[in-house]
Image (cartoon, rainbow, N blue to C red; front, side, top):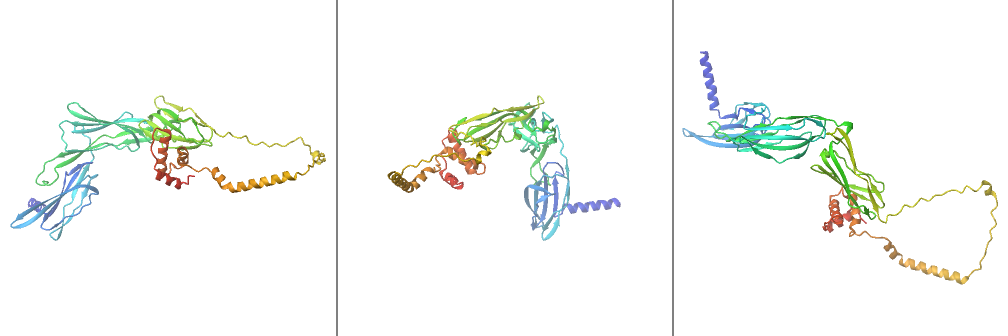
Length: 480
């Protein structure tokens, strides 16, 4: 009798579930971390108000779908809606019941226990991802190579795929190669090389790469309307890196060369001298600081450092009105091969300024110490006074000549004044460049004009200036 009661209760619950107006299901019931799951909500009735779901267990819904069917039983028609929601769960959870208004009544679906397991690497899977580092213990800033291998069985089928690269938090990504593919008959292998460098000391982790593969799946009576594509995620291993502090508090590591080239060594007063600094080598170029020097009596303007591959460039501009010397540029770095600290530098650059004003020696005033104190009280020597006779005609002529010259100067004073003040001429490209250089870093419009002027003056380009913009800049900065 006890067993009969249990059977009746089970049948009652089963009947209630089968004929419930709102029911829910998740496929698959066990999901691996990173995989996509599908939540299906079926509703049966004549008048159904579809619910609105913004998330499932706190996970964003990535796509939705719906299907409608109509059934007739003894002349009574009913509709069945099946709504599908795709999401990527991050941890196990209980999907709560969903309330739906069916035929004027609030019906609730069943709740679902969703299990999410940690992703495991399967070396025999159709797709495998592997990360390999050529060094696992190195110095901060020291470059190393990370190899990503993707192996795919030749008979593996995929409708679609999404690759998620490994994350490089705490590392500089200096380079990335193009994918290389090879076929050994059983596997198709794709290889990508990354050049990285640790940014800080300590234990750093390169997190796994992921590959999402979509495959076709068949349906059954329950999930006939479910998507016919299922996504599965394949992950790589992670890589641990130990980064050590550089000796003697150095910031640079690698092997470098440095060179500085001046476009001109002989210039006119206040003519710009362009100097380009180039550093080449394998190392943490990102940590090289600005090379802008201080030179007394010389205006120095710098551009931002640019790094392309294993080459660093910086452009400096020097403007002076007398001869000056550009000091040597140098860097200090640690060579990981020889385990020694090395110093490299350029040669100083002498700049000759034609027609530069020579420095006048300061006036030196000395006191005559030969005079004794007793001389101050002695009488002055007798002087012979000569009195000349007055020449009245000469005095009158000198008076009239001076009066005439004064009148002429008063009449022509405005004219002479104008000739002495030299107006700023925008057509003087070199003078215009010198006046605009101080505002280049803070004004994009000025930077555009300066670039054109430098190309026209020191390069081979003959690009015309924007006259409207030039007038506006002259007015904006009162260039007179």
